[in-house]
Image (cartoon, rainbow, N blue to C red):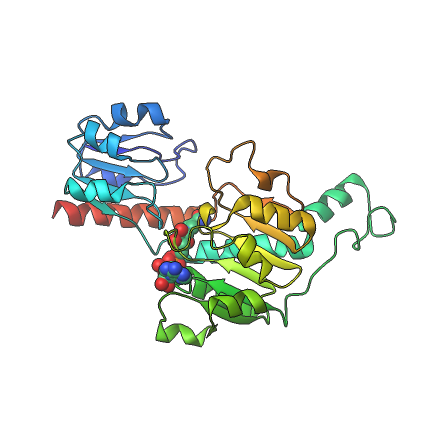
Length: 308
Ligand code: NAD
């Protein structure tokens, strides 16, 4: 029995699930609220999910689970320590969305630099640059060529981001806990403090770990250039959100764009919602159709490998 807890199936025909149907008795749910997780897993052996949390309690109430496939790169939604104790295999899918997430970094960054949405809305309203109340100095445009992009976590997505940054004429510096020799081609490794000191744009691509939680905080922001731009497409808790909101409001950080927040869906009292110049998208960097189908195809291969 295979259960998919959050398949986002509202758009029929969007993705093909055929690969799974030949592997077992498949049930697919669009999304699963917390109170229904255990009931929907029931006696399924194979559980597939994207963001539905699998806690120690869920694992205890569903003893039939043998394999959990996370349809994502980050697998912090599963209590892997508890899964390991119960000999449950957990797999993630590290490679499917590398291009999509790096592309999203620039969707966010270029929105900050060009305000395409706001300018287009103005034109639709009947404004043009000859309207003194609506001119580009209200929404300053920023050229990225010659600026320095600092990347924290120089793995797959970090290196792809670096390639695009370089194509735009940016200088790339990177900090990573592990140095990958082949990555030197895409940027220069520096210390974390040096990265904070030099970056005009800072983009987060490290995983969420005890050592990276709150890596962007009041203390680290104090080390950054005035007017730095911050992009987070990795995981929300990498940022101490109140500290970032304060820095946005004071102008120390010029703008931020985050695809991920500490608590998802976002809480109404998240300080970033009211902070100045902060763009927030609902954790969609991974979601172009092409990468979601790739995700599905790799998930099927993983289940086949598990079944032997
Ligand atoms: P990756 O494993 O290829 O790269 C992560 C890098 O971070 C590695 O080089 C690793 O050495 C480094 N790292 C580990 N600990 C570190 C530390 N303490 N300080 C600095 N660097 C450290 O992973 P990836 O495929 O590039 O993905 C990066 C992150 O992107 C994932 O962890 C995931 O959370 C996030 N992600 C988000 C989305 C989205 O939709 N927004 C989609 C996919 C991935």
